[in-house]
Image (cartoon, rainbow, N blue to C red):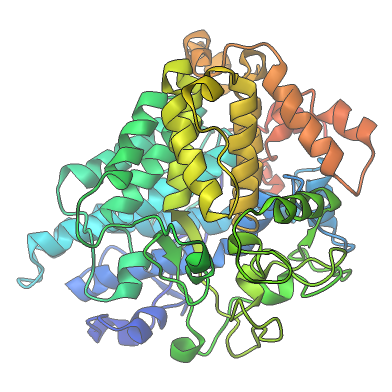
Length: 550
């Protein structure tokens, strides 16, 4: 991997004198073609500026994160002529496709590495840079790096693992891929290192910071997420419970009232939010362009890679859910909660993702405009953690199913739906496949457009032992990959077949035969490494096996 231009830093020169206590000051940190060299680090403001740069790059990564998390998952599709998006959703990728570009995530990692390497030195220069502040900055950097690698490992499985700062703009390094197990171990180590200091905050002085800067809650969420991904069910439950069973006065909390669901997205920064990337047109006079990515009616047929139209399969699921609503709302359409002007509206043939498009749930005409197209992008919220825990409990075995059903029923009740099961006999009559199917369905409906769907389906496929691919870094280096395969499931093909059926039935832009053929190869479920990095690595960086012949 060629590490060039990753060390460019998102700093305004004015940042050197800012205390960064206001939203406007924080959001004003963005690229100015300055560089964090080793003689840059002179004050606590310098450290804070680079921490802010990490969040800036997280925001710039969101268009990619949305595409990676949605376009292969069967709920959305791109109808334009864009080579990148259409090829990715049809699993017809090549290594020169722009959707392989992971540079935004490595820019986040570069900022985090710089803080982790250099912040401690600033204490010897700036007498006002107290240890508590430094440790808090380190926690934020650990979170940024852990989150970025969690997205990388889910999309590429094996990528270069870089944990040191590079301050020379001309640095060109050949870095090989690390194994998935090594990357997951690093993600967990980062979260644990941050939590071990006790410096991870529960809240900040301002609400937007509490939801948009790293907290202990955000670190718990990353741990629950990556442990579930790695099939460490007890660990997933442990970290989920640190959120769900917390007693802190200002802890993240599930919004149980059906009528309050839309507040998660408008105005945002809700109690349920754990971490969300923050935009504010009022403070920075820019927007995130989310509304233009999702149609207000019908479909978007332009060429933009960022266009997201509902598939017919997703539309059918939403119609069915609306039909099943049991809560009497007084609304003629019967829609409520996540389906009432939140995920779609109007005629059933013209759905719209209202969580990003609308400003009021009651008024369909109140659409976000260029001056308020600034909905936040939520990475984690409590409902997500609840369903993570429910999934882990389902996979742990029948003795845990009653607790799993209890969590699922909380999600269903808020959506205005009847309970999945209400008695012990009902639960005893269920099986693992049906319960897991329900968890996946609730995640699909609850998190439409929140970039979770593809990872849910890939995680489902990974519950099969035979999904574990050959030709990994562990294989090549003679490591104990057979032992690592124990983190995959016990069944031979059932869950992979389930995931493939969902993908094939929902896809609207390529043939069933194409998908059936490609998805037999487990490596095809991951993205190819960027061609530019392969070509500049002096044969050190090896392409993912499925794409070697392209």
